[in-house]
Amino acid sequence: MACSDAAAAHAMPCNRPCPPVRTRPHAAICAHQYARAHATVRAHQHIRAHAAISAHQYARAHAAVRAHQHIRAHAAVRAHQYARAHAAVRAHQHIRAHAAISAHQYACAHAAVRAHQHIRAHAAISAHQYARAHAAVRAHQHIRAHAAISAHR
Image (tube, rainbow, N blue to C red; front, side, top):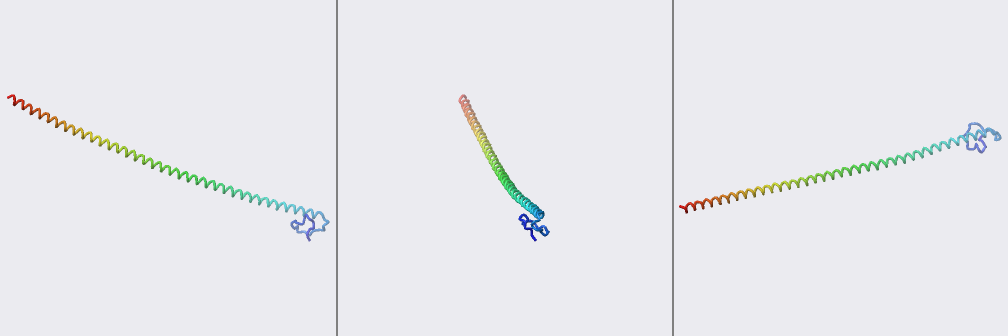
């Protein structure tokens, strides 16, 4: 037989036969059980709701952390790639600059050698011409001296 009291209508079964409606202590016990059951359900729903909110917040926070880490990792990779590319460009420029300096130095040295050879060649030619001219003058003087001696006799 079920309790007819309005407060006990949704109560959990108390496993006792309900006394007549006029018995108020039983209705108070049923109402108390209902209140406790209702409080338990509410507490359970509250705990589950909190757990769901916490799980959702954790998932969102975790996703945000992962996204931040992903962005930072990408930025680090990009920075590393940029640094490597920049270093390669600098090394290439350095090599090209060295090659240009070396080529310039070689050209300068080559020009100096050529100029030196040219000067030495000119000096040799001049010395040769001077020797020939000097020999000719001496020969001419010699011939004139012989002629003078012959004329004097």
